[in-house]
Image (tube, chains in turn green, orange):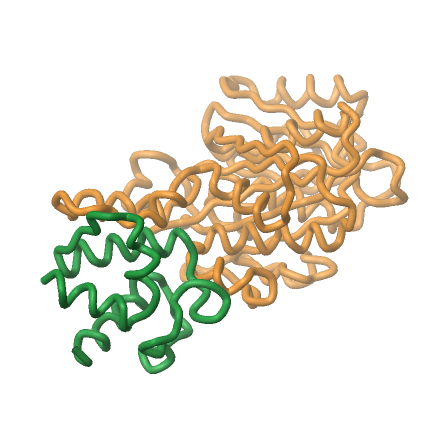
Amino acid sequence: MSELKENLKAQIIEQLSLEDLTPADIKDDAPLFGDEGLGLDSIDALEFIVLLESNYGIKIADPSKGREIFHSVNSLAAFIESNQ
Amino acid sequence: MSAVITSIVSIGHQDSFGKENIWETLQPLGTQSEVVAPDYKTYISPASLRRFSPVLRMALTAAQVCQNETVLPFDAISVGTSLGCLKDTERFLQTFITATGDTLSPTAFIQSTHNTIAGAISMALGNHSYNMTHTQNSLSFETALIDGLLCIQEGKKSVLVGAADEAIEFLELLKPQVIQSAFPFTSGATFLSLQPEGNGTKKAVMDCSVHFNNTNTEEAIATFLKNNQVDSDTIELVLFAGEIPRTIGAKQVNYEQYTGLYYSSAAFACHLATDYALSKEKYILIVNHQVNGKLGLTLIR
């Protein structure tokens, strides 16, 4: 699980062009969206969908679950593990 | 149809950004010159900056500084770009070709259109006024400028006019098929604020015209000057791209030696004209004949 989270952080940085961040800057449980966390927005949510499909072969069947799945690295990793 | 230039900002291969007079630092381009970029973080929020390609960064920063210097919110935004956001277009197309059935990354697609530049400026400035993009090959800047002048003529008090284009390596490969030029493809953005005449001693754009099927440059120049009741003897400086205008005896400067080759570089010539120490009752003529058959004429007082 920890390896998956580290990979996810590196992929998030690359996919979202977060050039000023390193994986160590992203906390496992910190919110990814909104002002409290990384400050990501709706376009980033679309990039997450692409990331999940292209890197893990996972499609989100229920878009209403997006907010919950994309909340943090922890929730993303848990979703990937339960769907692979 | 004329308007005063109250602010003008350029980012490109010259060290022009933030300079009072760009003639003082002007250098002919070397073969390996690069964009002299300001610290974009000062002008663009980090959240937006990470997504923006070089042409968007240049254009937004130049537009933002123009707005800061103008104070009065723009009543219209008119942008000229010949090739648009090429880096994002290339990125999107490459993904399009290599991705086999997967969902494509949205960012490059969203930002690959020509009107991304004017749209992003509108969002960055919080400006919901008239917003137009002109894509007319080497005359993109001039058509945007004419639009801006018409907006002033209609009664608008403050108009942002600009041009931006960026180079990618692929352009050099295409070059033999698209244009004959001794200059390498480069990138640049120039934005200026137009306001109605009567604003002190600043330079003014008197007129601008475009000729998409030009066959006689000398005749077009003569007609243009005549229409503006300007005698060719009162032209003090000619800034040109392409063939040298033969009939005017004024000092002539090929502005592409300073900009390199991008299709909206006439906007930088406008900046050169704005900063030039012009004698009283004299004029500057910008002759953009960068592409054969296409002629842009801009008269500065």
